[in-house]
Image (cartoon, rainbow, N blue to C red; front, side, top):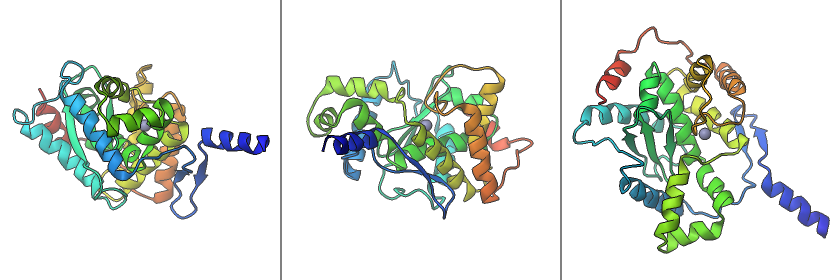
Length: 271
Ligand SMILES: [Zn+2]
């Protein structure tokens, strides 16, 4: 009896990666608890989004009415990914995108239910639209595969999250929103999000291994920061290898553009 309980506990704490024969992408067996319904994902995302909107010091959102061009660019990119045909909850989640005006932060993140946030820092840091699409594909995958609520359930406990969704606990909510950008996904979730980024982009005209560019560029510069996208695990070098291996298996477009006028226009539209 005791040993079977122990095995169960061990299984719950591990995230097993399997290779799907059909698609060639890693899939994380959902052994971690996720007691959230799709609607609860959306509710939690909406509450975190409201918290972000009410905290302009931490999250200085770029005003859409003042910068409609920038929002036009970011929506064009996210819509291409969302309509790639491989986003499971494309019709279920909100998929709202906001730009955070902070040139010093190389990051992007996505709440449960599909509220996407992209910092001006990472937009300006990258060289081509394909590269940003790769990062956004990765973040969209975390929400679409519901890694966020799985991870939050593990980190904060289901009781805390249900209290937030069902009741009214503003103090906990503030902590949750602040902790969101530092959320550490499992190695399996990171690999799976990288896999899905390639799969999404393979069905668009973007370079399908665009997600690798961020790692290559930050490694070349000897960067040591650890934003969500540059998680401490798996090793960034391995992630470049994995992303390129999946891209090779799909025979999708990997040609690096010589220049990217659309992306240059996007950068120029930012403050
Ligand atoms: Zn990630």
